[in-house]
View (cartoon, rainbow, N blue to C red):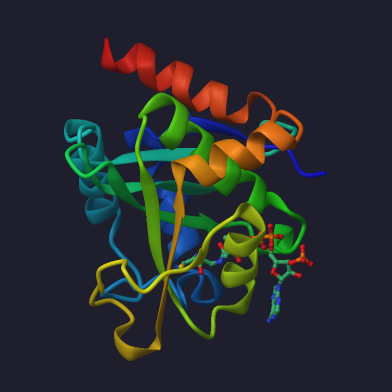
Amino acid sequence: MARVKLRPIKISDAEMCLGWVSDPAVHAFLGLLEPARTLDQERSWIASILTDSGHQRAFVIEDERGEAIGTCGLRGIDRESGTAFFGIMIGETRLWNRGYGTAATESLLDYAFRELALREIRLSCHRENRGALRCYEKAGFRASSHVPERVQFGRDEVRMAIGRDTWLAARARAPDPGSAGRTASERSARRDR
Ligand SMILES: CC(C)(COP(=O)(O)OP(=O)(O)OC[C@H]1O[C@@H](n2cnc3c(N)ncnc32)[C@H](O)[C@@H]1OP(=O)(O)O)[C@@H](O)C(=O)NCCC(=O)NCCS
């Protein structure tokens, strides 16, 4: 089973992230406005996350060897409604379909529900992004019509959600997801102090 650790993203990750999003295979379904960002744009994106940790969080996904393989995070964190939007990319395409996407999604959900105490995590995905849809389904997301529409995929969008109670009930029946969620949350908690 693939195991991952999540660590908070840093400005010095910008070049690596740019390399990943510049790959057309990675970029195809990300819903970005431009095919590739510049290094300055990438740094600004990371800086905006670091200065707005109340509304967004981003993590670098590390594999079992501690190699960075992608990123995932939450946008639009709304404490009042207890909701946020999830996003992910495994930038190293040679590692697709080995369970890393699902493992990272599960770790981030654990963090969102246990550490941030959010109520529901939402996402939108292009309906032709079959690998992503399968990954989300394995992690527990289900299609949901009440998730507000986002502009990025228009009518080709599939909206999904998972609630805290559903997640916690499933976790109670499943093995511990490992250190990934704890790593993410512990480091984030330290940063927030
Ligand atoms: C989406 C993404 C994160 C998935 O990561 P991953 O590590 O490949 O995910 P997993 O291996 O955990 O799960 C992928 C599943 O999709 C399946 N899959 C892949 N391509 C598929 C296809 N064309 N049709 C059906 N299933 C497919 C895999 O077989 C696997 O399912 P299985 O474990 O039941 O065999 C990764 O592909 C990625 O980063 N893509 C580019 C960025 C992106 O699109 N992000 C999502 C934006 S909404």
